[in-house]
Image (cartoon, rainbow, N blue to C red; front, top):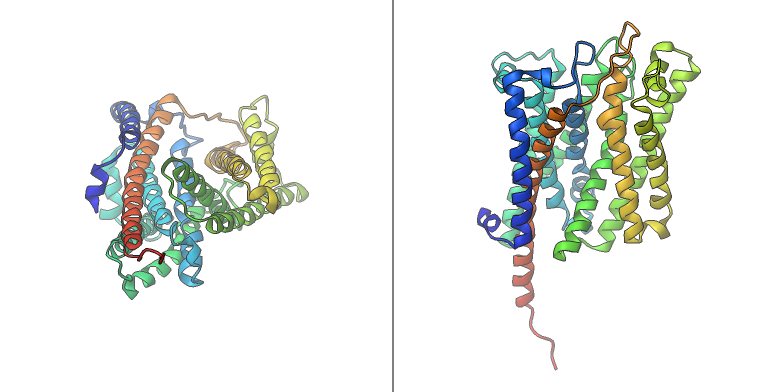
Length: 396
């Protein structure tokens, strides 16, 4: 099936070339980072995790989002997701690869990643995070590619594929739970020190990840004519809406607990993010933008009559993705490290090299996703065309 990735329209090759050029530009900045060191980033002694780890956190949620399709399809036999299930699994593959790439660029020197393998430390959450991410990647590659191959041959996948798909559902919860434990296990970082950190991660993952998937599917429908079915689109939109409501509810729980208990350590990060401390207000406009977009998207997603209109749905999903990215891909990490345990402010903002290296990784993920989806769409079109040609013409 790989040969299908070698043929395509000018638009397909233009997309790959554009992403390749962006990746090449970012690669130059990464080489500069390798030669100079992490001094090119905005990291410091007080803020030891930055833009790279925040994108890892967000993308783990995108990877886990495949469960929103796999669980109804395999556990509840909801066949309406049949056309999107492969796309969700391939998105998970792309997202996990980007997650691992962000770890590589964050540790400074790539060879250091082998230390985790040659010197395993089971008492470290980071060790288990590496395990669950790689296993989840392997599960999605096996299930996605095998299912597509059997579909191409008009055959039902063997039972072990369904078993692995069910295992991947459980594993999807594990990858984001373990990632949340990386944060919740840091003493002295009170913004992270909450029992519902894993629950917040999962709620945000199950709204933002499927929202990105649905936006890409709608774009694919517009560009190629691929139609996953109106019923499938509407059902996934309902899942996204409920998950976003739970995500907002969990955040409000954190706000209530911090301010009602009047705990300075828990209040300080929220004050810094939404009001600023000692004139440091860099994050304030971002966080209030996230609030407006997060609440505003519900106006487009909750009413059924509005949500089922494609333009309103697209606008609501875009607002949701931006709001969740600001909260989880930027605010969560910066708020956790600011103020520091000594109650002083060390301002962090991503540098140009950090942003360009991140764009390199996103471009790489875009290339992987484009190729995988191209193969999946070509196979589906080939099978549907073959089956259609076998149907006898109607009697005159």
